[in-house]
Image (cartoon, rainbow, N blue to C red; front, side, top):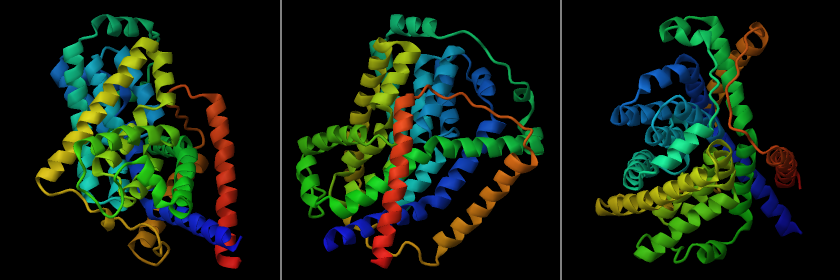
Length: 406
């Protein structure tokens, strides 16, 4: 019993510590993302992307880079861009960029995994887009694209504010109130995933033995980085399966990715795990609702194939230049997360900024309304996640009591 209480306390403390480490990065990333989404509207993106494939591919990648990292937001925006005339390839580029090249994800990866994984994330995001584009050119699914576009509704919503220049918006209190609303919406979209992800990371760190990972991911442990091709391929395939079983979104998955790497999973396997947020069942279901099951399965094939190719290229590319990171360099357990250091002061500063934004949007300017289209979520899944998140809070509270008072 004492051993369980000790592990429970350690799991809860690790989860809370992980979140404390990442808090300022979440706030900074979502403030930047919210500002960009208000000042650079979707309608402006649609007009700018145009019909030229090479230009729209680059612009789709750029607009994805400055968009939200939330998969459900990205899916809705992708559908809207595709419906308004963007090519299928540039729409996929936007989808991949908005879930892999975003600023907040890079900051979080830097905190938990280090610079090699940040480089891997951004280079890998570009490789995912290039491989997907190449596969689309080779397969050329014209009829499927035509049917998918025909399936989408044709109702357009005009946004009066979208014609204002971004300079005028930057000076407008109304626009900043909308940033506040969007910022709150970003947190509303991810709080359940983040809660579950960080709780699972703590549980895995405290309770799951290394032997489990050595069974799931072959030839792991002992700081090994010299893997055979087939071992790396197995890690790349198992990584998305692990992500599928613990679908908690890209931001919540990062501490789990750090744990996997610390347990000896290859660089390629961890990158595949991070890239897997678009090859899970909820995303497959939403794409089927938008475009039909045939196109949805084609997108799944496209992204999974690109993921395998990208992870292999990253691993062998980094290995060629002796840049593969050392698993022993990732030490995020058994540390004092709550000491007075730069993390503490950054958290205090960004919590204060959050307070100012919330005051502006929800107290001073209650009259300002802002809604953003989201992909249709499963009500059953969302309700289940909400109650699971509440159970997580009880688990964390009990664990912290066990650590400090029992």
